[in-house]
Amino acid sequence: MQINAAINTTSNQATKTPRALIPAVAGGQSLLLTESARSLGGAPSLFETLTPRERESVLKHGRRKVLYRGQTLFNQGAKHDGIYLIETGRIRVFYTAPSGREITLAYWHPGNFVGGPEVFGAGVHQWSGVATSNSSVVQLPGKELRALVVEVPNLAIGLIEGLTFKGKCYSALAQMLGTRSITERLAHLLLHLVELYGVEDPDGILIGAAFTHADLAHMVGATRQWVTISLKRMQDKDIVASRKSRIIVRRADLLQEMKGLGD
Image 1 (spheres, rainbow, N blue to C red):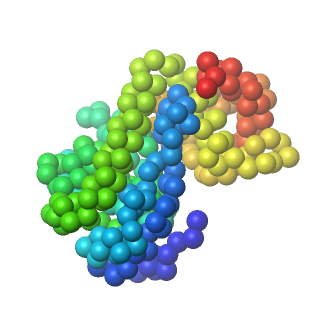
Image 2 (tube, one colour):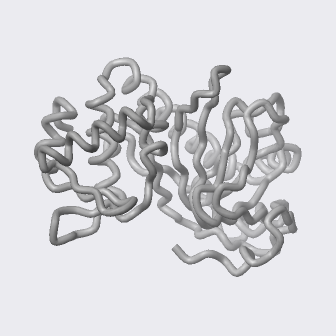
């Protein structure tokens, strides 16, 4: 994905957004643990229902922020101040328990917004957001956003649809964590990664995005050591193969069996 030239500016810079740079229909994807990604449908773009003039009006109130990979966008427990529209890159949203253990809620892609659920700025963040690749976001502060939904009803519809989708996502995640074994969850996740990032390879299907064993562990609710051991066992059974930091799925049919009932 191409990174906007604004990435070359200072990473904590916040500037007024002068024009509509986010696509009208981004068709944003999301990555999270779910029984069936297809059943949730695609994440709705906040701007999908807006006219070009409405998009431009909304973005006039926004402030662009550019982040490098690993930079924090917002912290759990910090004061809320509106939402962030993802223009480029990928944002990981996660919860940290008092023990320090993390669970990844989702990875959000361009066209999605993060920073909810209290989109108008009340309260504090319930989880954290960090850029997992060089990213550009547009912040809409809560006060301005509240005024905008009165002026632009289609924006209010987009917010409701986006929050509805996120609610379905987190409900699906809770169901998976509560009803599936860790092995089943890992099989689900690998198949979902194949759907999103799969690339034909002589040895099978390469997951064309780098995720560490710790990243996978945070998504399935396990330890990094457990994921490493499980992937080694899968490799011994010729289900997957490892190539440096990438995973090649050789037997998707066996992963389907491991995850339980098919979609």
